[in-house]
Length: 472
Ligand code: SF4
Ligand code: SF4
Image 1 (tube, rainbow, N blue to C red):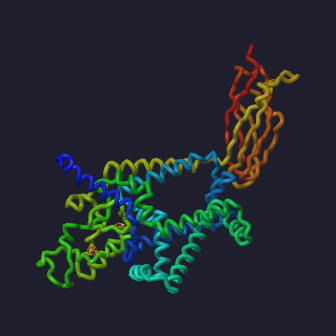
Image 2 (image 1 turned 180 degrees about the vertical axis):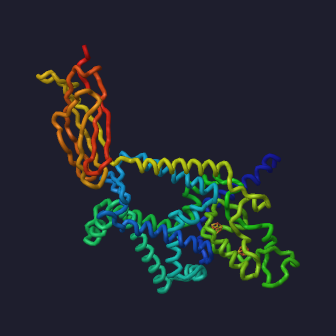
Image 3 (image 1 turned 90 degrees about the horizontal axis):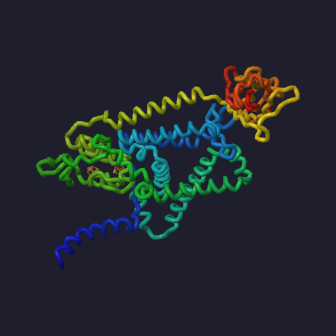
């Protein structure tokens, strides 16, 4: 064998190992139940987020659902605000803020989102809770899965899946309730009269929940989630992460409580494997930082509990930074954190200001395309327009319309007041008459002012063009 071929062999073996890992049959993970401060925080986050998801569609505001994204009508209702397609800028700003917040919190505190707020984590937690209530904790689940088919096994598995499916369908129903008024949806469900799209989305979302939280679980984080792949680019040596203190823990080994383990040349890790057993992705944090770690902190709670029982100080596994682990100093304020925070503050300020000065009234000026202008027998020049007025408030508004910008310009068929119902669009044909002696050019600016008589201060001015004969 040539020397070159001999060198290639270990490389090939490593490659094969990676490939084998990719195609290896999934080994089911049975995470052990864990208690502690981070489990409590995770549960609080779960209750808050699920409370919003399932509860908010039932909240009423001024006689309608407080938050509903009415896609067919192309209107988003968020408490007292109604957003129209014309308000797309606010949605864009909100999405940019959300993305930047993710960057900011990841740079500052690592996988905070994955561990505490990601829907995949939250729903997996609740599905695991149901599983534990029915099948028991880790040991009971392993025993049940290894047992041969029996009436008890079928009953437990059946009950678990029935509970999962019911919960998943409720999730699908609540999801659709964000887009279709949930009370109408409930009435449709009770009378078995749901529309085809609503039925499809309830079943589809329910199925996705059941599959992702019941079966795929950590596989979604490890193989499917793009965020898991690129977030390491946002990490630096001062990013908060969960790590095992190797210097303190090694050499690991079992020992009796109260023995002088230092004399046995042992570190603080008693090699009980509990940190591995609680891990929802099935990894051993003691092997170092791994991309599979979703930062849930279950191993911290588990190990702290072990340390407590052994009478050792807590924190063998803890939130720390790479710099701190190596005995250095952690720098909270780094350029990237300051830049993200600065950008966030600017964008947030822009969003609040834009919402504060938002005028819930829209007017488009559409010129009549059939004639450039008309000359009346009295010698006046007339232009015809259609004004598209959108009342973006929820109450009926009475407006006064006026024109300015050209001396003597007057509306000749639209005197008085115009009433537009709340959330409605009105197409209003108008004619404007001008004495041609007042036209300085063949195309002059003309301003349409619309003022609400119902809501003082609600007004909008738009500029259009008035065409006429070229001045002689
Ligand atoms: S829980 Fe703590 S003591 Fe037990 S194996 Fe993990 S790191 Fe070691
Ligand atoms: S290693 Fe620890 S923090 Fe990471 S996923 Fe596992 S239990 Fe959660």
